[in-house]
Length: 247
Length: 304
Image 1 (spheres, rainbow over the protein chains, first blue to last red):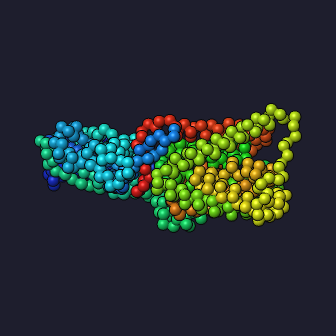
Image 2 (image 1 turned 180 degrees about the vertical axis):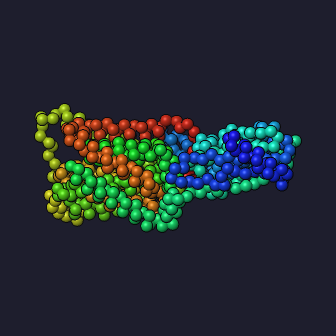
Image 3 (image 1 turned 135 degrees about the vertical axis):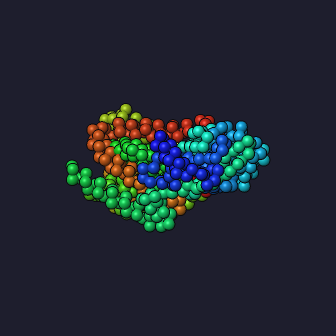
């Protein structure tokens, strides 16, 4: 951490005048899902001109998401009602230097969808028995489940301000992240309004053998299945041969 | 040491997977069962998505069945003709089963069906096996083994065929129907189905015990291979990395299990197996009936 700070200091000295009033960078441009991937930390750091506050929001690629309610039927818990939400971020992280409610009015927070309770998810399908009033329960259920999977931040992370110009925060990408392009929005806030907003992107992708296996399984599914059998046959056969020799 | 699985898309401890492979392999060597009925729930329990657990376990069973059938083959304990008839049913059943699996997945009921099938089959077979082996233990030495029934309604069915190795003259419809049933189970539950097929072959078909295990393994190879290909094509759910890790642990475990098994009596083994089967059944049954932590759950669709 000290190393990064001194690096930041050096960078600042090298460019005494900031091109803009907000500059943001990441410790790595991408998250690589390789064989040893078990989640990844990413450092977001930057410099700002004014004594403002910083909010960072990271959103993963959006998909339709289904949420199901379990009900007891004849003593057994069965999935019954379903709501499908359109364009639900597969990942949502929020970090802020102060509680967001202290920084921006509710209307702005809502418009910018800052905070998991302001995602404004759009229910594009509800099964027969779901009333309009019940949809928020499904929204809450979705967020709870995503928080439990560490894909949404439950409580906002902290942004550390260093002096008046530097800031940094750690972003955590758990092992179950989806691949795709992640949008990182950094807001600089002064006196209850957004002074500057910068958007950068992080690529989350499979690399090496992981990518090869995954792509092969999807693009040549039949050959993949047949190869899986060949591997099984050879291993079964050789296992038998090895242990027969041993006794 | 963690390893990220390319298809399951989760990070697992490599030694945990090897250990599970070894443990279940030990039990399968000990009892002469495939072990799918233990492995699939265990995989789901450690966080592998159920669809991937079922599909991958089918792939692993191909390997362990081949390893097992070779020993029986050499002793001439495989009734190929019977195996082929079981297989015809098995291919029909497993193809239908994978289709059913995909269909239930879109309905969001696949987890429920997997669990209910486990509770039902493990419950019935575990209890039957428990009662049978307990009786056998209690009257060991006293009575002679019960005689096989030679005539019941099953013998009135058409398409009678002679099975030389099994010394049977029965309708070909019988092994085909058993094959269909086991094929469906294999696709939905991620098991070889030996625990259903072996009793069915002994009690329904009246096959001699010596050829039952070899013939059932022979048939399981092809049915699980069919499931593997169909699951790859329809659900992209076979994780070869996971399968190979499981396999490596399982083949070693099975050898030790087989040696340990030689020291125990048949009835004792069966009663132990029955207790284990009932244990898994109760565990899954509780999952279904106890109130879940969260009544709202994410469904399976659109990305992962």
